[in-house]
View 1: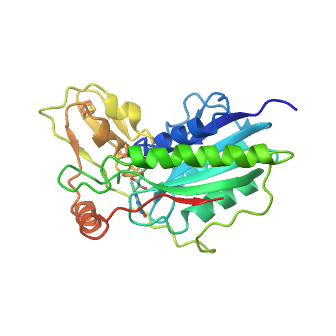
View 2: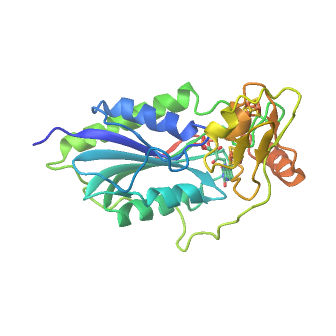
Length: 266
Ligand SMILES: Cc1cc2nc3c(=O)[nH]c(=O)nc-3n(C[C@H](O)[C@H](O)[C@H](O)COP(=O)(O)O)c2cc1C
Ligand code: SF4
Ligand code: SF4
């Protein structure tokens, strides 16, 4: 039989999902092929990526209890052919609600066979030093769980005559999924004084909402509030000033600071 390889597929504006996937892949110990990073707006990707004899590790963040919409749209660019897959959602210590079942449906209808799934916790996109919601997660403890999870899946794969599940994978979540709540017209803003016009915020923006010329301009209608620009600005010049989002961040910090652990489904 052809030697099995593995490929990471992810949408991960603030990189917590990518870190979890990376640790799972390390745990399986299966040789990797190029990653498929769906985070940046279209650049570098052309057409559909077809998977054959590979293990796909597919991950996306939870936005309002669902898979982030841009991840859903970009995941349309992958196709499996009865390809085994590990499905991962990463959420900010509140809840993952219907996101995992949504990811399972997306992957299944694209031709993947879910072998295992997980919900990990990542630093909340809205976390700040003043409101440290799940700050610095995934932490070493989470990443150790992710590596162990990878090892378990490897053992499961090794025990199968051909890669594929023995019984359909069950994950929590409701069908129909909860309604998607969309906030538009909100974006982080820039403090002009510390901003060096370095362009990093534009480079990391997953929706091309930022342009940097004589100043930083943000197209609020394109912004998905992922906060990648805030977390990556080397001058701490980007910040959120929207009262509604600040209120949500405060509510999250007050109500969802108690540590939640990763949940694994095999
Ligand atoms: C618009 C938006 C909505 C979010 N909704 C949820 C949610 O419903 N539950 C939750 O626990 N975290 C939620 N989060 C937090 C992210 O799921 C979390 O920070 C995740 O680690 C981000 O993944 P990334 O680092 O791969 O971008 C939300 C974040 C954003 C930006
Ligand atoms: S990353 Fe920060 S310093 Fe650089 S252009 Fe953007 S706002 Fe300015
Ligand atoms: S402008 Fe909006 S979409 Fe772009 S990186 Fe910043 S928060 Fe994310």
